[in-house]
Length: 298
Figure 1: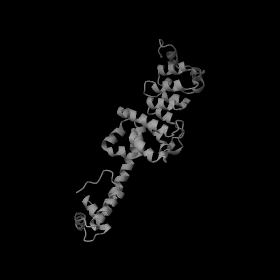
Figure 2: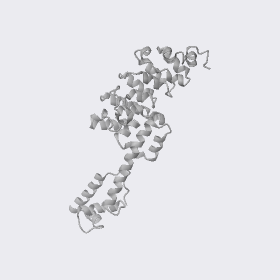
Figure 3: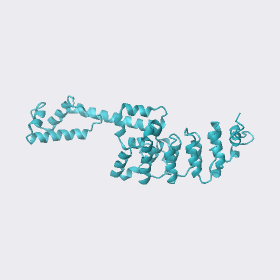
Figure 4: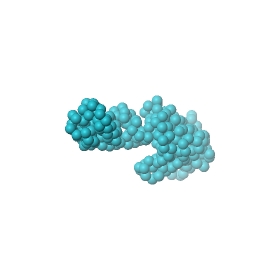
């Protein structure tokens, strides 16, 4: 008895049945014998039944239903995997991939998320429009997805692959300043914001900035929360045109974390601490600590 592939394709199984029937009709005794085991008639229905029985199913309908169920289940798992690879901090995506390795090769989306540069190159070669085409549900392009992927943290071996995919997408015309639509509730996200916010990926952040991504105040704010030793924040500040004008809320992030180093980096780049002080809300002690490291905040 043959084993049904983990990712079965009903079209492939239909071709198997047609090829079996043609071989039997052409005089192949082995092929004819396989069909004769289930029916005296050399018909397509009989060939399909023979294929189904060889995979351990009582009928072609049962085989078809199993293929449909497996395909739907894998599609659902792939969607959940992509979401976990971006939004989850518990390692769920890694556990899903270990349990179902077929996810990795399921689609362009999973290849992008994992940084499978060879697969992405092949897919874009077949259809160049894939490099910039937004997802129908989320409104994210592949560049948003690879920028937001956390796989450089889940498994550092994927870091260079993610960078290669991001570079490939940019070379193929992806916009480093492209904003998502409102679909899925993620309106206004740029690839840079994706790289800075959840992923905290300095490699892709640097690439996007070198390719023309323009940092905004909210990008600086989100970088203040990144668990990356301020690498993304430093990159943003280096490429920002005028931090004094740009930084409106950026200081709020390191202030809320009591992060004197983050505050110091922003102040040194030109951020104005007076925007956060008035009679009711005086300057935070952490700002004084950033200005004078010898005087820790109290």
